[in-house]
Image 1 (cartoon, one colour):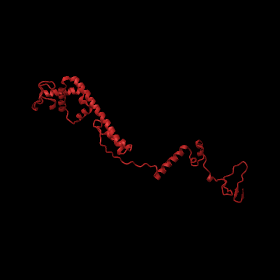
Image 2: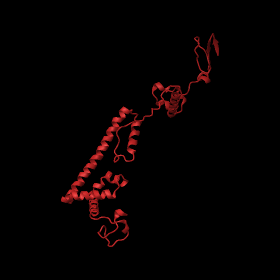
Image 3: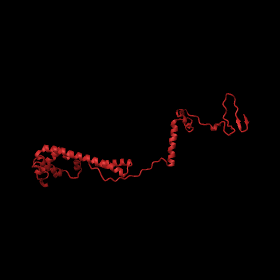
Image 4: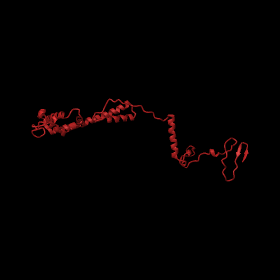
Length: 246
């Protein structure tokens, strides 16, 4: 090896690569690197990358594309959390105040109202935007229920008029008399019958009319004779025990 001023020249045998020895050019630049400063070896997987990334030193530190992606993605999340950037703020609690409500037939247990309200909250809609949507759904559902009940009632009345003929008014009065006697207003069975429209069903109406006619024909005896029965037969004149006395 010869030294000429600040320049260091490395002599190597012919056919061999120069050893990793550090030297300085006149302008101070290094002519070679030491083992400690050797650049990372290009990974095989990097050959598939665009030309501008094939020599990237950061990517060369990883043995696979998946490892590199995992490193950078995890690192970006960590930096975002540390800096507070990219974090979503907790949405404010929304407490809707709706003026309309579903009829009992449409939402007897409140499940529909609850689910609809939760959905509107999930969308993050404020009161002034959520209320028109809520009201539109309430109007539609309630309207559908009313139409169902009214149409069903009309169909049943038409069938009863055809079946009862000129006795329709009397049968209707008898039916109402029996219903009022046997079904307590506001009870679960009353709500269920009216909710489903079953009280207008021709079969139910005919049965109630027959019971109502029997009630009007007989004056129930006093309770002193309850328990005795002279002849068999439901609601016969000889009966001394009536169903509504039990």
